[in-house]
Amino acid sequence: MVAPEVLETLQHALPNAQFALRDTEEYRSLNSTTYQSGLNADLQPAYIVLPKTKQDVSTFLSAIRPFVLNDKAKFAIVAGGRQPARGCSNIDDEITVNLSHLKGIDVQEGHVSISAGESWGAVYDELGRRGLGCAGSRSAKGGIGGLPTQGGLSFFSSRDGFICDDVINYEVALASGEIVNANADENADLWLALRGGGGNNFGIITSIRMRTFEQGSFYGGSLYYQGSKFPDQVEALVTELQKPDADDKTHLMVSLGWTGAFGSEPVCINQLYYNEAVENPSVLEPFTPRDAQLPGLNTLRIHTLPEAAKEQAGEIAMPSRSAYMNTHVKANVPMLLAGADIFMAAIEPIKSCDGLICSYTLQPYPVSLLKASAAKGGNSLGLDPSRGPIVSIALLMYWNSANDDEKVLGAFEAALDQIEEKAKTSEQFVHFTFMNYSFNFQDPIGSYGWENARRLQEASRKFDPEGIFQKGVPGGWKLLAP
Image (cartoon, rainbow, N blue to C red):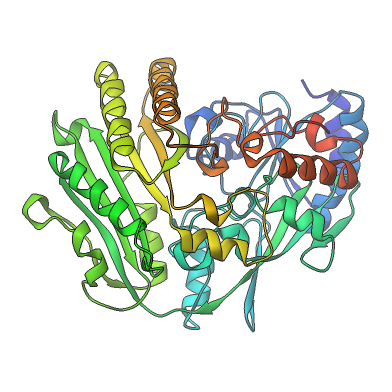
C-alpha cells in the first residue's frame, strides 16, 4: 500500500492537478467509467491523480521517484482504458495516473499532434472536416496512450502497416521528469522501442504525432450470417491472402461467435472495408454470402472515417467484464478451421454464464501490411515480410458476473493452449503475440525475438536507468530486465 506521506508530497508538488480521493463521488465515477473491463474497474487505487498538463506529468514523476525507489509507492497509468487485461492500467491501494485531462488536437501539413487524453473519435472528427484521415484505432472510443505503442491495427493497415508505424514522434515524460521527443532523428532508439514495446515501460506518453493523408468516404461495415457458412469464409480469406496481387485497399475481419441472444447455434460476422468510395467492390464479393445473411444485420455502405469508427465502437451496452487472448498462425484453411472447432468445444460448458458473448476472430496480416511496416523505419514487433501472410486468432470474451471470471478465463486459456499445440504439430504456428489483444499470462515481448527484446532492455536501461517503470509500474507486460 502506498505510504501515507506520498499524498501530501504530491498535493504540494501539484497544486493545479486534480486528485480524486477514495470514497468520493468523483473517485467512484472515474473508477467505474474509465475502464472497458470490470477486471480493471474492480481494482481500487488509494487515489487517482489527474494531471492537467504535460508539466504536471513531469512533476508527478519527479515527486514519486524517491518513493518508488524506497518501495513506498507504485502507480498505474490509464488513458483510454480499453485494454482489458487485469491490472494493465489500474492498481489496488496504490496510485492511478489518469491522463484524461491532457487534451489537444493540432492538425498541421502532413501530420496531426494528439494529446494523450484524447479519443480517436475526436481525432477523426477534426481530420474529417479537412478531408483527411490517419491510421488510428478502428473504434471511436479507443485511447491514444496504449494503442500506438503496442502495434495497433487500423482500417488502413493492409496499405500502411501497423498503427505504430505511422507515429512520427512520441512526446514522453521520463522517470527523471525530463520531457523528450522520440523520432527518427532524436532519441531514435526510444522511438523504435515505443513502436511495439508498450506504453508503460519507458515513460508516460503525453502526446503523439501521426502521419495524415487525404481520405474521403469509403466502403465498409458489418454483416451477420449463419455459422454453417464459416468454413467458406475462411477459404475465401486464405485465397485472398495468398494472391500475389492481394488488394491492399481492403481490411478484413472474419469472426465465428456465440451469444445466447441468437439461440443455440453460432453466428458469424464479417467486418469488411475498402478504402475508396466504391460500392460493392468485387474483392469483397466472396465475403458477402447472400444466401445466409441474417436479415436486418448488414451495414455495408459508403461512409466516412468518423462514421466507421463510431460504428465499430458500438452503441449497444456490452457486458461489464471482458478479456482478450491471441495467437498467430500461417494462412492455412485446415488450421483455422481446427482452431474454430476448439473454440466451439470450449464455449459449450460456459454457455450458461450470464451475458456471455464470445468470438473467434481472424484478423489477417497480408504481406502488403508487413512490407509497409518494414518500409517505415522499423518497430519492435519482429515481423519480417517473409513470414507473411499471417493470421491473428483473437479470442474475445464478454460476460457479466465476477463469479464467472475463473470459468470463462480458464476455458479460453485452455482453448488457446490447444490451438497453439495444434498449430505447432501441424507446422502452422507463428511465434508472435500481439500486445493489443493479450491477456496477463501471455508474453508478447518475448515473442518479438531475442534481438528486439535486447534492444528494448537497452532502451529501458538508457532512459530509465533506475528502473522506475519496471519496479514502480507493475501493470502490463514488462521487459525481461530493468
